[in-house]
Image: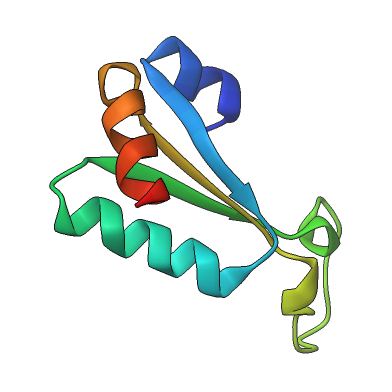
Length: 81
């Protein structure tokens, strides 16, 4: 689901990072506290072109987490604790 569709359906972006460790920690915190969330991993090297079977450069990943609009404040509090 694209970013615009997420917004249309009531999801809000609350986390963006290139740090996979932080991304997994934040996802775990949200799950442990019952916050429904969507996540997305974007690697610019994957955009539109056919790639060989070479190993992806994970350092190029950008990680996103979205929560429903009514959970934004609670999610932010959980993620900052």
